[in-house]
Structure formats: C-alpha cells, structure tokens
Amino acid sequence: MQPNPQTSLTRDEAYARAVGLATTNRRAILGIVGPPGAGKSTYAEELTARLVADGHHAVLVPMDGYHLAQAALEELNLAAVKGAPQTFDGYGFVALLRRLKESPDESIWAPRFDRNLEDSIAAGIQVRPETTLVVTEGNYLLFDELPWATGRKLLDECWYLELNEDVRHERLEARHRRYGRSDQEAHERTFGSDEANARLIASTKPSADAVLYLS
Image 1: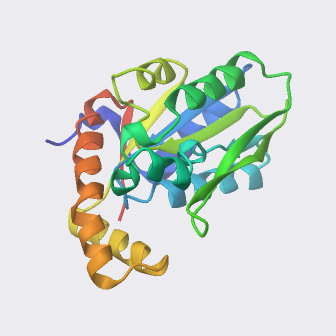
Image 2: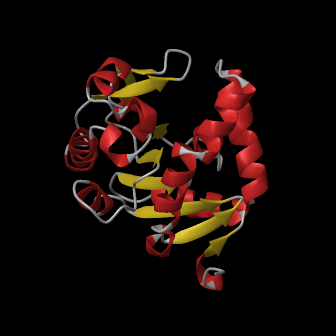
C-alpha cells in the first residue's frame, strides 16, 4: 500500500524537515526506522553529516548500541535470532532517549555498535549540551509493545525508509559476506531471521510520521 502523499518525502524535503527540527528552541529527537538492509545507518550518517556541515548541532545515536552482547545472546540461546526485539536492551535504550530529551544540559555518553566486533562498546558517542537534534536509527522505534512504545513518545518525528525488496536483499547478503559469512550463511541469514524481523518492522510502517523512498 502506498503512503499518503502528504507523508511521502524526497531526500531534499526530508533534509528541510530535519533542519526544522534542529532549529527549534528545545532539543529534538528524530527517529529513522526500516527493515534490515534498507539503508538506515547509511542514510542517518549522511543526514547527520550534512546537518553538521551546515552548522547545525546534530549527533547520531543508533539503537544498535543496545544490542545484547554476543556472549549474553549465546547464554540466552538468542544468537540465532540476533536483531529480534528480545535481543536488545530496550528499556536501556528508552532510558537513554528520556535522558537525552529531559536533561539537555548534561553531557551524555551513549554506546555504539561495532560491526567488526559484532558487539557494543560502552560510552562511545558523546551528546553535548549544545546538541539541538539527536538522530537515532533502528528496527523497532515504531514497535507498539513495551518498552519501545514508551520510546516512540519521546521522538519528535519518526520516518520509515522504504527500499525495493530485491535491492534490499542483495545489499543485506553482501553485508553479511563482507563481515565474514559464507554465501550460504549470508543467504540463510537474509531470508531467515532477518526476513522475519523485516516483516515485523514493516508492520509498524503505518505509525511513521513520513515515508522516505530510497534507491
């Protein structure tokens, strides 16, 4: 189903909207959501970099920093479904969003996810008091179950990224190979646990404030 035309954004429209969020009199938080391989990380990085280059005080704080450690996933028998909602510290992520929103005068440190290590690194991203826009991206920003639903209320806007499914699958398989998986492993991960997560994420699309189509 195609989105309402009023909520469908081009890249330029999305940038103008982000600038509007970055120039309010209070700190804003913009969420970017989409299925695995849709380009969330790349787009969020490019958007944040462009805002900073244009003189805005923006910082990117991805949800991936709240992945459970690989050792914890193995202990909990969740390694095979890494990326599913239960493989994140959702309450920790929501607590960070609340602190970012309600304590803008603090210098706040957030974790980051290292894809080479396949693990999170604590206190890897600094959000300074002068930051007027926090961009966050992740799978479950629009999920209507706790704790994610609480986090959604802390976002000023949340955009859903749409990408052609064939292109998304190709990019996802290539990413898995790039990080050491065999062709078979990459294919099985893409059309196995990743696809199950993608269907769940797609079901949250109607809750987005806007839809951005990427190529």
